[in-house]
Amino acid sequence: MISNQEILETIAMIQNQNLDIRTITMGISLVDCMDGDIEKSRDKIYEKICRKGGRLVESGEYLAKKYGIPIINKRVAVTPLSILLGVSGGDPLRYAEILDRAAKEIGIDFIGGFSALVQKGFAPGDRALIEAIPEALAATEKVCASVNIGSTRAGINLDAVRLMGKIILEAATRTQHKECMGAGKLVVFCNAVEDNPFMAGAFHGIGENDTAINVGVSGPGVVREAIRRAPPRANISEIADIIKKTAFKITRVGQLIGYEAGKLLGVPFGIVDLSLAPTPAVGDSVAHIIEEMGVESCGGYGTTAALAILNDAVKKGGVMASSRVGGLSGAFIPVSEDAGMIAAVERGSLKIEKLEAMTAVCSVGLDMIVVPGDTSPDILAGIIADEAAIGMVNSKTTAVRIIPAVGKKDGEGVNFGGLFGYGPVMEVNRFSPARFLARGGQIPAPIQSLKN
Image (cartoon, rainbow, N blue to C red):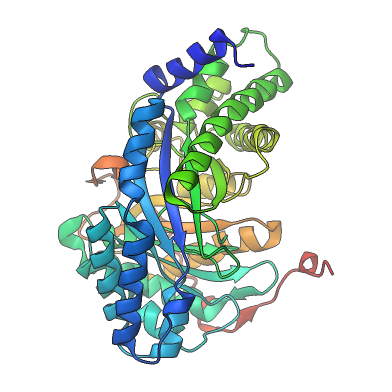
């Protein structure tokens, strides 16, 4: 039975500590929309997205009002479009346009799935879709793109890594008038998951149901407040236990919304992703959790250890609360979307190299990192290769969402607005990996991939 105290705690989480449902994401399979004629395929895609997702926004608003829980974004993720392109051929931009049109018709915030999975090589449609990404993101408003270039089982496609360095820079350049946000809607993955509800990397995996509802919950402010209230002499085991219990409560909220949304829409509930995804709002920061744990400034020594404790405790609390925990559940560390991370960069305690070390123990990777606009494609690709290697060797999902701020240099900044926040331009190591990348080929899978 739920006590009055627990009800009051949940109300306080929502009103004072920025607890929210970050996203309800409907996954929609487009496998049955494949056609040898791209125009027929487009018609089928539009019809199915509108039919399946037409009530998503309405349902989200109803649930937010019913339970008093803010639901920030309503999104759709679809089958990676390169698969359909391999059947239909034609101009990939035609698919981006129809996704954008459908997203606007049903009123959602973003649609993900302009994606390709090339961890072991390029299948028909893959390269054409990847090369179309910069123009597609510049020409649309709602479309997000992702490319998976590696996995623990396959290794890393170094040719794809090198290509993505060029694609990211071109995406930023084509959207220079929009604060280079083309690059902000593009994620490069290693070990991408099929049920991720978060943009820009969401796509609906081939192994998923025809449709599914996946929910992303966020509550860094709740976790920070729980630690703040801990006894001053609480040891680190006790802090971990506090985080675990807090994550349990947050997950239950997400599971409730997921089940209720599924019932309203007649769609199976998939997973709840318990990711501590921050926002630029004061008090809603993963960096501030680390500092509340006792590190003077995020990025200082002890940061990686504190983040490892946080990430592990979040996962343990989540799986106690629900058997449907999935996606990327853990702690996100996007710089521009986290007020504490921004402050740490500006005071000099947080560098890209430290962020890379942190990604070995948290969810995903180098997220919403702004770098100088004159950063070369090879350096961007080198950053991707390093991050993918962390994911490959550690059997975890890692990603890079990096934004070359065209026309800007170290010490300046880019104001994206909204949930994307403000990104200080971070210094990069200028020594080139060009000769390494030029070797091409496949970085072999590590020995731990042989688990059969």
